[in-house]
Amino acid sequence: MEIIIQNDSLSHRECSVLGLNEVFAEDCERQALLFDGFIFGVCLRGEASVRINGTVFDVVPGKVFAVLPKHLFSAVSYSADIDVRLIFVPIDIVCKLPLSPNFDSLRNTASNPCVDGGEWAADLGALCDIMMRHDYTAGKGEDIMMSLVCSAALILSDLFEGSCHDVKKTLSRQETLAGNFFELLFSHFESERSVAFYADKLCVSPKYLSVAVRSVSGCSVQKWINEIVLAEAKRYLCTTEMTIQQISEKLHFASPSSFVRFFRQHTLTTPLAYRKD
Image (spheres, rainbow, N blue to C red):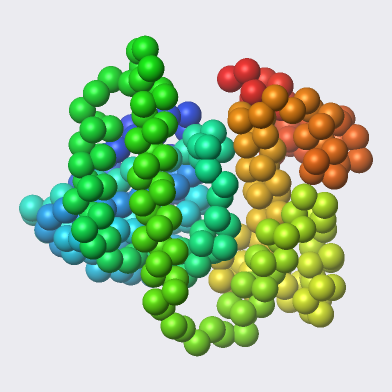
């Protein structure tokens, strides 16, 4: 299988809306997409089978689905009349949205990424049409696009939160452990960044915790810790006027220089350069 990192049509700085059949060619079973951001899909016509991190889901009109950052996404097959709109929202854009991320909802979305969109499906399709119809590079275009993306994100968040209450599933020990880890992480990530801290709280070894979390989510414990700290740091840089020192103190780094080193190691740029960009 060929893994496509990002895509020639996609940007890590701008949102994009594309059709499923635009992203994946007719020999789609040989392709997979790894995108550094969120992918939201809505099916308006036709039928398709998509694979999200190894699990296949059937998509019919009215269905919506979400692919979390760095999760493998591919189209197994689709009908000739397919109309599935894909909204690509890069991580850098997510950090600029005036929304407090519901991490618990995102965690549940990973295990139940395809839900019934109901009456909202057609409205999401209409939002996609607006996003695709206009040029957002001039005037208030960027603000307009951000408002449209924010509207879509709120609709999708509500749909997935509602589905989490409806789905009753018997969890394996690894799924339960991973869920408990995420609950701890979202409460302590600002001050605790060691795997050992979370393993100790959960009364397991760091190795066992890492194996369980990777098995369930596809990413290691340390990767999740780093990604969430980075997402919070980017949010502060983009949506507040906090200084680098204030952000480093908020995230409990030993010093501003240690925060800068951490940020640069994982983004290949400095916090100030990221804020200016």
